[in-house]
Image 1: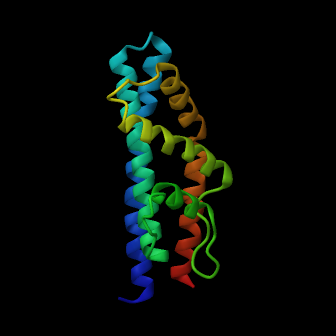
Image 2 (image 1 turned 60 degrees about the horizontal axis):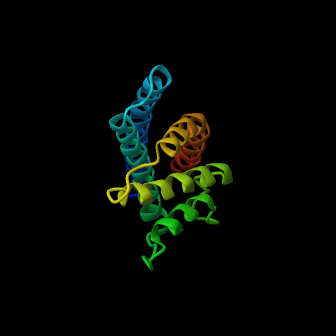
Length: 162
């Protein structure tokens, strides 16, 4: 396939994943509205935790897409999830620009840690205050992260026109 077409396919897949991320943000916005109107039940906390978990998973799927297309390798040596996220913060000279700013990286690293906790929470449950904190932080960081993703897309789209 011609390079311009390969980039066009990548951009289409990238956009699809961004749409999934935005849909997950919308679900979290609805949860936050309920939190602000009433005392959250255990079920609501667990549901919000589930969607925070899903949000990070959607981001990680995007990172895998970027890494597979531009670098084509990332070794799974036990630190795969950490290294994948770090890789998105760096520019790879003459290959691709960075995807995330340092601030976005730090915020998403916090979500990555929560995802790990969520996956193992069946033993002890979720911390209500932590979930409430993270959903509020998630909504406050939404514009920043989506701006990083849009700027990356704009730079990549320019590659196909060069």
